[in-house]
Image 1 (cartoon, rainbow, N blue to C red):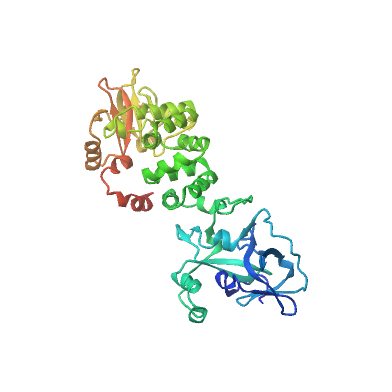
Image 2 (cartoon, rainbow, N blue to C red):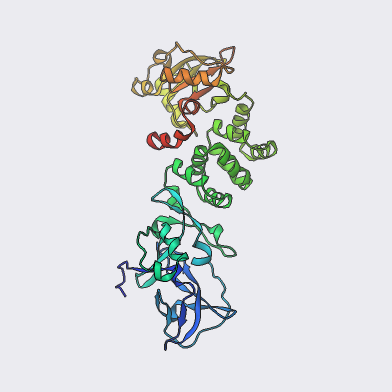
Length: 421
C-alpha cells in the first residue's frame, strides 16, 4: 500500500477483476466479483464504495469498510460476515462494469470522444479509486484473449480519469449529476466536434448542462445536419433558449433544416424580438445575398458624433459579435455610409460620423447570387458587405465568415475555426 496523497498505479484492471473470487478473512471463497461501485463526488478520482457480489443466483453488496484488499486475484475481506441484502443503488453511485465499461466518454485533454475499453484502479489518498480509462486496442485483447497470453500485454494507453467526463444518461434509475464543467471550457469548435460524435441522448445532456451562450456557439459550429438532429430531439424550451443566443442568420439556417411544424414551435417559444429577427431572414431565398446576410448589425443616424456613437454602443443591451463597422442611415433607413470601428475609436469625440465615414460603398442587392457575393468579399478582403433593397434601405450585412463557408471545402471548416477562432 502507498501513503495517502501518493498516486499508485497498481495495474488492476476492471476486466481482470470481474468474475474473480471474493474471500473472507480466512481465505474461504464466498462469492465472485459481479461489479465494482464507485461514488462520484468532489474528488477527481472517485473512491470505491463497495463491490457487487454474486453467489449462485444471489446478488448482494459488500461495503468498502469490509474490504481489506483489492487485487488482480480478487477481493479479500476483513470479516467473516456479510449482509446478503440485495444490492440497491444510492444517489451518485456508478457501477463501473455496467455504466462505464464499453461506454462513450469525453477525453477533455484530447478534445474527442473515446470508448472505455478497460478501467484502471489505483490506491491513493487512503482509498481504492478509479484512476483512468484504457482506450488502447490491447485492452480489448486483454479482455478477450487467454489470461496466460495477455497477462504481460504491453502498449496500454490510459487516460487519467481527471481528464474524462462521463454521462448521466448512461446511469439508469439513479440521480447522477454530471456538470460537464470541464467540457464547457473547450473552444466551441471542439465542443461541436464532440457533440457530432455523441448519441442524441448524450448530446442533449451536454446541451442541457452548458450555459445558453456556450451551447449556442457550439451548435453554430456543428455540421448543419447534426445540428438539426440535435435540435429536433432537444427539449423545446431549451432549444428555444439556445436559438435566442445564436446569430440570427445561423438560427434561421438551422430552423430551415427542421420540419416546418418543429420550426414554428420553436419560433413561437423564442422571445418576440429574437423570433422576429429570425423570421425576417427565413423569408429570404436561399443562395442569395439576403439568404446569407444577418440582421444583427449596428446602424446609427449620420448626424451623431463619435462620442455619441460610443455612448450608444455602451448602452446597447446586445452588441453584435464580431463588430467591424457602424452603418450610417438617413431618416428613411437608407445606407448613407460606413464607419470602421478603428476609425471610430481613434477619432475625437466631437467628430461627426459623416466626416469619418466611407461613402463610396458598393452594397449587395438581396437577390445577388451568394457565391458572387462571397467571391467579391474574398477578392476585396471585405470583412462585411451591406445589403440594400432597390430604394437603398439597409436590410442586413453579410459577414466574411459566412461568405467563406461557400468557398472553403467542407472538411476545412473545423480546422480553420481552430486556427483563427
